[in-house]
Image (cartoon, rainbow, N blue to C red; front, side):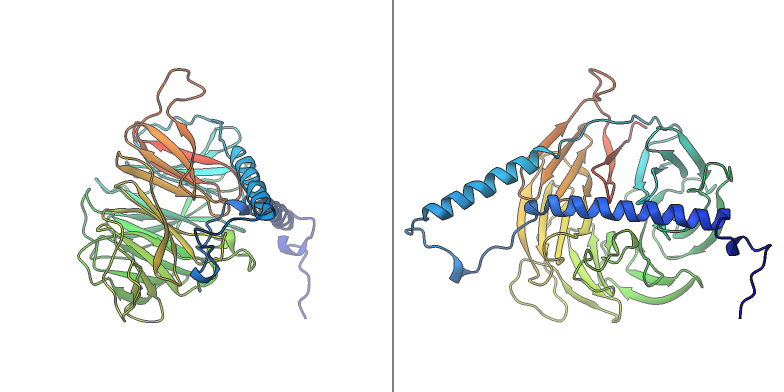
Length: 425
């Protein structure tokens, strides 16, 4: 039997280690409860699959009074719910040293990480707008941070960054108790894709983290993507993309921040959706060496399909946690957004949100809404039926000042918060 050691801080239920665990558990529980309430309240806005032909009413049939009343009630409820989705500017963060390239909210702490084009990483308190930490990710000249992801979000949080030279770095100490006053530490570094083609026109290194399995997926401007065991820094598998186009997005449904069984996607942990620079979307099974199939508008399938609906660079892909759990949302630079049913392999909805190139797209994981950004200095908020909720052109805290060209957007996974980064810093 284990004998308690008075010198072991973990053995003291009133010690700082135990207190820290209790604090995180409480914040995590509150975040999940809040997120669940949002999900239930806004579920009426989730995309609906088209009714089967046999259940459709013929054009010459008339609706009954009860059906008309029910439809009007639903329309009124939908309009009321949509009215609550307007956002107001809360904080204005002025980041120095480069243009913002990536934004990432911490799911359970009041923290936002910002990566710029000078390979600098800064952490900000979202309540006070104060910078809490900063680091230089790489001193290699010309290296860009092209992706980032949180690891161990609910406990000792780490931040993984991916650079366009194929390297991955994992940092500790970005999310800590203010009383600790510790500097960020580099706790791991390795080359995930040594053959990655560098260049400002490519996607660089794209990362996706699976907390439940401990797998880090790495793809980008190369002809394959790899699955890594982060604990041992060893490659588990490599998967050919069979295309010269670079991977621009990697999406998996198994993220810790949304890991509650009742909330998760119906897609299993071995399924990965990749978006490409040529507009294609392909679904991979990590247990095999080939793509399960390409998601397309075609009604038939083959072992490996080569079809597409998007016609330009995929900006973002996201598996959602509303609806049936099989929905994927994607957007491309030409301004089109599509909602897919992965079981059918075809898009349910398509809407064009802007005529200027879409430079950023964020999808809220629990509330059926998306945000798009443009270098033309505006942000649009939409519901998934294509209705515009809000158009943001000006700063609220700086009257008459236009927002800068939008380079990145990020929703908080458990709150109605949106962060927007400009290429004007």
